[in-house]
Image (cartoon, rainbow, N blue to C red):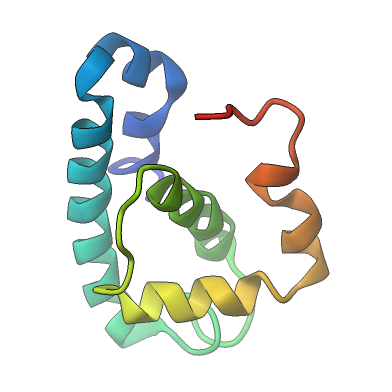
Length: 107
């Protein structure tokens, strides 16, 4: 997540890509989510690594938000979807969600 998906979604990267930013974002999120879903098959409990929140979970929620922002269907990633829903039940994730931040872009 931290090196193969997130950096490619930064605003300055997407601005450089221009009109193809939707295609670009969907491509790299899909590629990353395919790999992550396979990893989570072996590590997931309630969260990414067992039943305790780890740094992996801190990275997951913003990337699912990016996937939604770029109209990526996350149905093919049931483990990612399930973990994201579990995390969003926690107050710390609710108040720190990207949509709650004052600098969240509108598009």
